[in-house]
Amino acid sequence: MVKQERAIRTRKAILTAAAKVFEERGYRAATITEILSAAGVTKGALYFHFSSKEELAQGILHEQDQWLAIPDRASKIQQISDTVLLHAYRLQHDPMVRAGVRLSLDQQAGEVDRRGPFTHWGDIIGELLDKAEAQGELLPHVSAPETADVLVGSFAGIQAMSQVMSDYQDLLIRVNAMLRHFLPSVVIPSVLASVDITTARADRLVTELRTPVPAPEDDAVAPVG
Amino acid sequence: MVKQERAIRTRKAILTAAAKVFEERGYRAATITEILSAAGVTKGALYFHFSSKEELAQGILHEQDQWLAIPDRASKIQQISDTVLLHAYRLQHDPMVRAGVRLSLDQQAGEVDRRGPFTHWGDIIGELLDKAEAQGELLPHVSAPETADVLVGSFAGIQAMSQVMSDYQDLLIRVNAMLRHFLPSVVIPSVLASVDITTARADRLVTELRTPVPAPEDDAVAPVG
Image 1 (cartoon, rainbow over the protein chains, first blue to last red):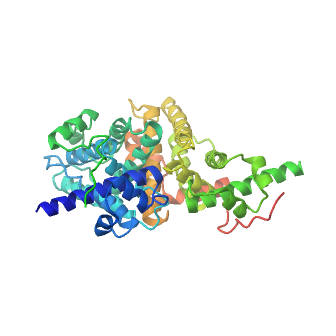
Image 2 (cartoon, chains in turn orange, green):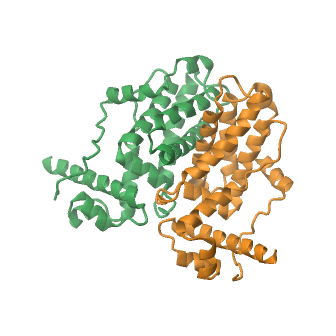
Image 3 (cartoon, rainbow over the protein chains, first blue to last red):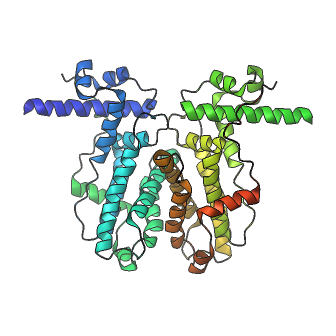
């Protein structure tokens, strides 16, 4: 059990280091040697968990996917909004999430299957939209898969623009504006009137979920065998 | 005059080659030597036009901005939709436009001011929204700069997603879906009913503008002094 915990911690330390190196250097320029040095683990430990740079990238993309769950809400539209707001918050605060999103948009990460996050997010949002439709929250003629794709694609661009324009400082404001432009075409007016998409809600969500937001300097991981 | 034409042709050949190299290699990994070889020009000719890799990138970003003009339309919302559809079409067909958009989203092009295209597009769409508002096409409470930012950011992500998912094959379909989700929150119903945002319109626009769409293999430029 203790052994397993240590393995999980090592794996996490390697992924955190890889996320940092990919973000600083870009996927193509990053080397395993740099990641080893940033993680402070042995070569053997790294190769025990990941056999290649590509596997490290897939690990980060997968890690990003692990953090999407918002507890069930009565309104599925609220649940979708919460999912989007929380992801925006995590983009601002969690280097792993940031690295995952950047990898998805990294033109030079050709060997990595970058469709994963788009598909995964599309599935999650699409499923919630199906439930919203079943309980009468959607306008007629909304196609859940299409609407999910528009939301996922738009979010990808809104976050990229926020990163370029303000290094993510204005991300929650931009996401709020995106949702205000998006939801009226999708949901019935009474849902629209009751859904909370304010930037303040993101903070409350984090408190609610007691997310372990990593401290800015917690990458100083002690060497683990 | 002939001399000047030759200089313009040389400049264009260099930018086309740089666009190709940046697209294949990414900004950071690309070298001037590769661009020289792809352009088939002398080192002196290149440095006459561009003093650095950064200037080449700025040249491409600027070139992308030169192609946005759609003739005046009675409906400014139609003009915005046409601008977006045409840009999508050019992304599919013009390597220079593609390279510009990719540079704007290239995390590793840190020394290049990537805000340019976002700001430039935001200004163009914002100005058209101001005109739309003046002639009563917009819903009350629409803020032109905010709405312009949402459209520009969403488009950036929709095109990135289309590139990842289908190498731009489905771009016009995705842009049509984006506009159908976006416009109802922005324009009055009678405008909504008359605006044409079909994928077929993009083809008609190209015919109307007689855009010189580059042939796929027209990068074989003869050496120019």
